[in-house]
Length: 229
View 1 (tube, rainbow, N blue to C red):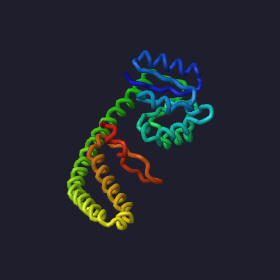
View 2: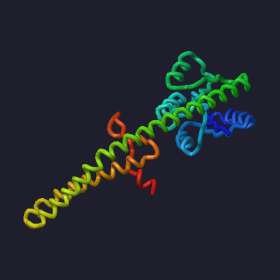
View 3: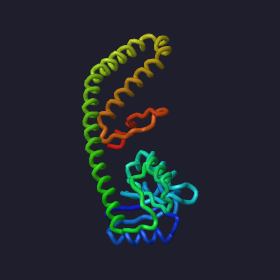
């Protein structure tokens, strides 16, 4: 059963949509405004949003822009719903990422259901393609990690061995050791950190991107090993 979110400040319209779409085997969620829309999207697997353009506080266009700029929800199809059908309104809606537009009042229920089904079908198809693409990226990433581990494994072992030898030799001279002991510790910790990072990369089971600085993003690996345990 597909889930549709209706965002409209008119309670009669929300009730009508909920009843109508419920009769066509859709699960329907409703909101009177966009204030809690992201909380609703996070707690429910929403397949399509019907969004009124004229809403209290934030307009439907503003809410639409936020949805389409949200990494997690930007692929959810959004149908804009309003009596305000000027060319400028349509232009703003589609430029902000709207997938379709329905004028008030709805003249054809058959057309409405057909449009909803078409957009949900397209979404599921595109979701499938993204999943396949993600799986391919993950496989390539794993191959790269195996190469990195193979390339760094032996040098890291050699570094650890020589650090241990140097530390043992330094212990023979207490003054020298007390002076350079912090350096040995930092070198060992840094080398261990490289080794742990390689292990985490090798154990990645899904690709998760996080913000680094400004527009630069990076692969999130910090909790990978812990998550597996």
